[in-house]
Image 1 (cartoon, rainbow, N blue to C red):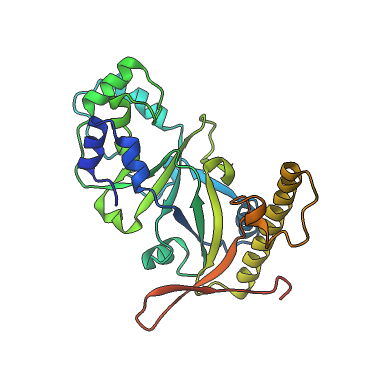
Image 2: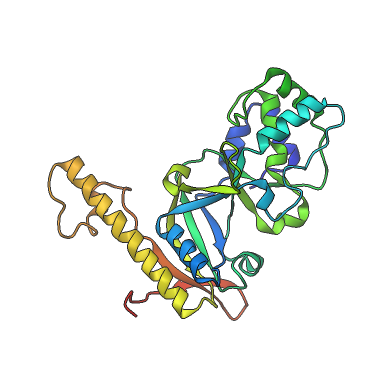
Length: 295
């Protein structure tokens, strides 16, 4: 289920927008990554993954030049338009999708199956929105003007209907992008001349559950991904042991992994390494990709 333009505006009129958004967001979301060829950039990419950090981009470096322009402002004042335009310059976006088996996404965003895809368990629903695909440009002049007149902050959770309506251009794109099935997370950061910022995934409510290597991912990069996963799992295990000691007041048992769900249910999870392949029907499937970290 996804929002369309009509259900978006109807849900606002019925004060059910947040409810409709929550209903649309799946329990797992995915992000595709390419692996840079330059050593320094590749090391930086793997280090961000190892640290479980996520890059949020400003509008100017997104690949659609019409981002945030999906609307008409026929009668809003210049002051209202300028105020809102300046506020949106503070916004940063993380673009996600709902499937790890999208052939075009593997081609376009994971460098023709040589990159990888990260699966995230969605633990918080704050600021995640399904993108609406529609070629029309709704006239939001009245909402923009009311927004400016009341000088609200961009509070997406506000019950003010005009504030919520002007979210539309932030989460809408032309129908030609529909193949991406995008969900986006939106943060706000003061303007500092940077093209975006890194955030700890814990602050976003996204929790890495598995990493899926492309079918053409090189052996060297598979080793790097395997090492990254081993580091993440070791860190999570150490953090979990500390939680057990703090909560139970005793040393963790030697077989802590086997007993993790009994000790502190839902507080420990292992990241898995998979690899994408295709079957005889040319359908993309995941297979286990277990490698020795020393291989």
